[in-house]
Image 1: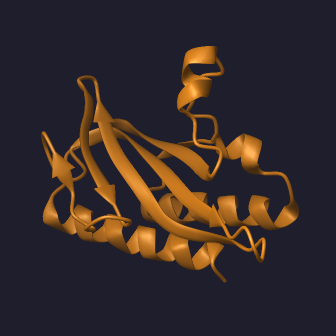
Image 2: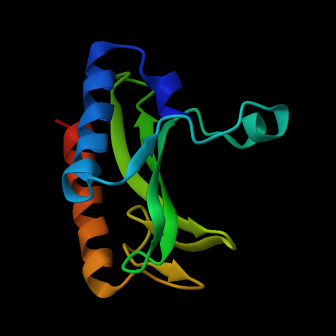
Length: 139
């Protein structure tokens, strides 16, 4: 679900801002998009209400990330008994004019997979971002 729609209280707003700042501190030229999903019926059917989705757009194609945009989906699970909501992982995907080029899931094997893949250093940086994102939401 779009981060802008999930920002319903001060705690979530602060956490979303912290995630944006993680990327902005490393890549000052990157533009964040708190509404990466269109608001149409077809897209609405695909949106996960248990995620916070943020898009990041480079000014051009990033050679190190092998993409122009990165979509970050922060996944949550709410315990039905306790009501506690925890971050269970992060999904990331890199896109360019040809569509999705790669994906990384911390829920699966923490490996980038796809047509093209980020360079090794960028891949490690992305994994570090994912760890930090999980810390932000599970603290």
